Length: 336
Image 1 (cartoon, rainbow, N blue to C red):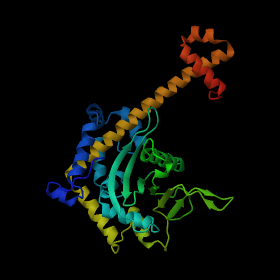
Image 2 (image 1 turned 90 degrees about the vertical axis):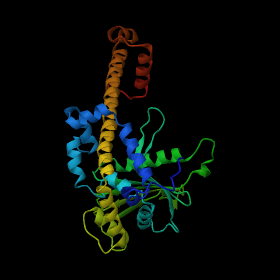
Image 3 (image 1 turned 180 degrees about the horizontal axis):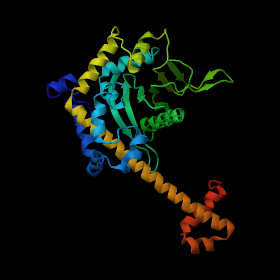
Image 4 (image 1 turned 90 degrees about the horizontal axis):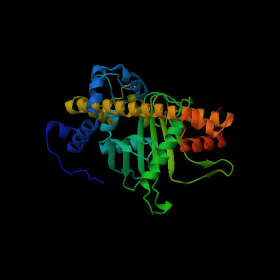
């Protein structure tokens, strides 16, 4: 793993933003990774990108993104990620969310870390990925839009983190403890609670599994007088001022510093374009899979209603398609 550099060129901006040079290198990497043809389409506001923008929940054009930059705050995952690069702030947030962890000390924070899985398997983009001194890992996600699939999304993130953190040949005992934390600007469970904590539990034997995994949801619209520190943070994310809370004041200062930095502004535009590229590719892949499934369904119908020979003649189906269609029929995966 690339180690964080201990020193950075002391410009005004790199001194203000913790991590300085490393952060700017990440911004440059974002810019280089984006397809410039797509950026040009994004700049022109090409209608073909509208669906991708809607699915990604981002501005449909670069001009809209520039306007959005003026109003976004800590609840924006891009801003949140760079603010949390400050290890002290990330550590304090986790302490407020997980007060029962003794001596919590963050030693590494990564922002917008991409975790790729095996070929053909869905990957994830982590908002904030942190590790503490005891080698416990934390994934912190800022979730603005309400999504019905949140529980399964958390499950997938947890599994992906586990696969990332256990190297081949190592015993399962080496699997580190992980926390998946979602900070939601809505109440996903409609119970009004500020904090929801989930661990694998056997209700029959009143027994916790103890597998070292936990999923935490912070509902910033919830209220809990017993969690004053977390409540102050949640109120700030929800748009309320808490200037008497030192942590919130420091967060506000970091947000201002990020927003006033022209490099972060440019990075935000490229970040939106990168998301647009990811979603566009995903939509194309989804369409391709849909077409393939439709063709296999047609092959399967002909096999069922006639025979394989007819399917080959009428649809020019290959032997591989015939076998795959038969397998899908046997498994009940095609509705005729």
